[in-house]
Length: 556
Image 1 (cartoon, rainbow, N blue to C red):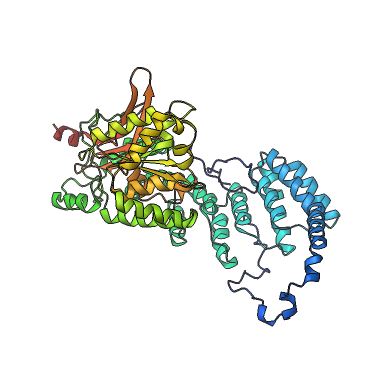
Image 2: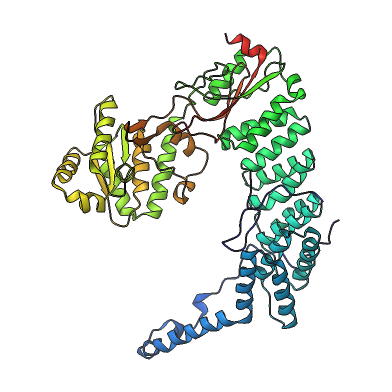
């Protein structure tokens, strides 16, 4: 099931379903609070007494007293009633205990404990996720009003939880209105801020209102992900808005690539609908379609639905060359603009220099200019440890030799290893020492310095060399998220070599597929949608194959 984290105010909050049941408007409680200004008052440091900048011997001798005082102040803050309350509410949040949280809240009011935005956010979050819906809604809006009356300025998390309460109250319009008000407080909405309104409208079949939310998102620079696009596609299909279904299919193609099972079902239901049979041009401009394919780099044309008639919708697999085993359509490998690769390499180097010791990475770039480019780059640590805990140099050697044999230039691939791997432990064995020395002399080994993250090095080397990259690293952690979801997944698909190891077959290299694992729209109007089921290593990837029966006959 597609899920979206609608809001969390402590690290342990779990994901909640974005699909809210749609259930009277409550007066907005923050109208008396002035919006946050973008200009902040600045202290003129030069107007301060110069004596405050002097470090005298007397002040130096008093430093231990200051440190002790600092510790005392820190302990006092920790033991303050508002800090204790924060901790107690966070514990309630972890347990999902709304009853205890409300008891603490009432107790705090009786004892005149000052509440800040975090206290209120935790309470609102618990109310918005209450199993007793009516009780949670009632208490949530009461707390929301009291927060405004007490003059506590809301933040993005406040608005998000309030929007969830609004949708639970069958009022997605109010949820959207809350998002719109965020800007007046200097708060940029996040993707989760829009969720309650968007999913609320979609679940209620209110397509036009959902599209309005979508437009507002894009104007705010917020990018819809699979859950949002799937909901928009579903409401478009329900509302018989074929133009919008077509738009969402292409937005999924551009940003999501492989879809989850829930989205796959939404797509299948569209193609199986009676309305989808009647949608499409019977006579289309073949030249314009071909022009669209070339302009888009292959795999889609963007000219709208082609053909009429019933769709044949099945789950299918591709053979090794990218031919659909169901309909016989051959998938294409979508081009990557060389300029995109160059720009990506530059942005990658910039990020690496910001997060690594700049001098070290610049030194690597200079080394790469002298010894590169390389047909392939090897993530040495990943290969050496693929089958066991101890680093296996013979395994690494075998892979390097295989890549050399496969290379048209017969040049050794570049092996990236951390300095610790290249100098210590198993590297001290005479045979391994000799192997490493031979690679070093050939300019095919680079040892990354102490304290560095070798991921930056092997990725930059592969991208800048326009070569292949051998690693089983899924490249999904924080480092790779910095690279975005537009170009990087496309580059990875066309350049990453993966490995499997077994006693029967030993190490086996899996080259990048000769076709793109992305939604494809053919010149005949056929559609192929890859799902996340299967990885083409242990299990063939499952595709949704949708072809017009007339178009299917024309292929043979």
